[in-house]
Image 1: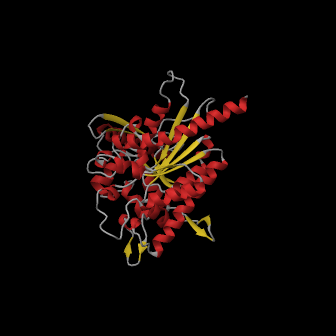
Image 2 (image 1 turned 45 degrees about the horizontal axis):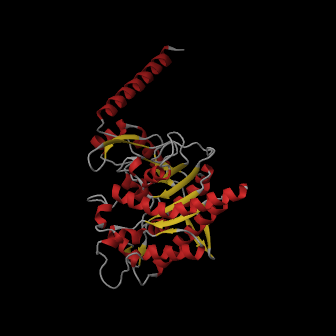
Image 3 (image 1 turned 90 degrees about the horizontal axis):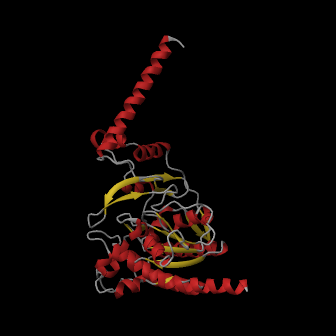
Length: 375
């Protein structure tokens, strides 16, 4: 090795050591956490596998928000379903993910606890898998289910959709309906520079410090997702807003978005049933539908939920009517976080109770079928 090459190697190793030291020091401060969202070639984005962050619930109780190796805020699950276990796979967005709460206080955690009540420690009969990611819509949920989720061999697939799925799935353009058939619409990958900067934000606290103090950029921040994947589309000369989803007289653009939404639901049901899983539909209502902000005659609160209910009935699918359940509450506001549109612990409990009432008869029916077939 020449002296020049040796010096170059020493300089490189010194820079690497200095960088690692700075990275460690920045992380120890806790002031510049790495990004929790990573680019994903299949779905556009998901939570960063292995991500961990100390945070607090709305009551100020500390907990660790952790993401498993699959990129979901859930426990680890073996790919092969253990013997004697029934698996329930929940698909959804930030409503279902519930990152403001510990896992055991989300709908997935509460449902798993309720279904395993009375069993001895280590003898659980049910696994509830939370495969929800913030801002995922029905297009991404379908992509995940077909390419990854069904490998987990779920016995039940529960879709916790939301009204905003209608505009988000249509706007991204991952799919289109042609002659009544849902077809994949190829979309270009994110530019290499965008992906690299996103990965840097997810992997380096030092890069986050530099973004904040020197570059004044926000690569890896969740709102930037919508720069690469538009969350809405145009209705005439304006962008579709949430309240437009409840218009009684649908503009043509909204009708096409709703047609695509229907196609996603039916295709998700089809692939679930073909894999031997029972499929359950639901729609998490928005505060906008419940608090009187939809003015007058043009709007119909619960319109998306009613559409899904009719589709479920026509296709013979179980439907959890969460809009009706939230309307029955003495004060629906208790079901949402203060100053936020996401569900509180009370909201997750309400969702869990409604799902449980739907799924228990199906479980009893399945157990009876298995007993009869074994005789």
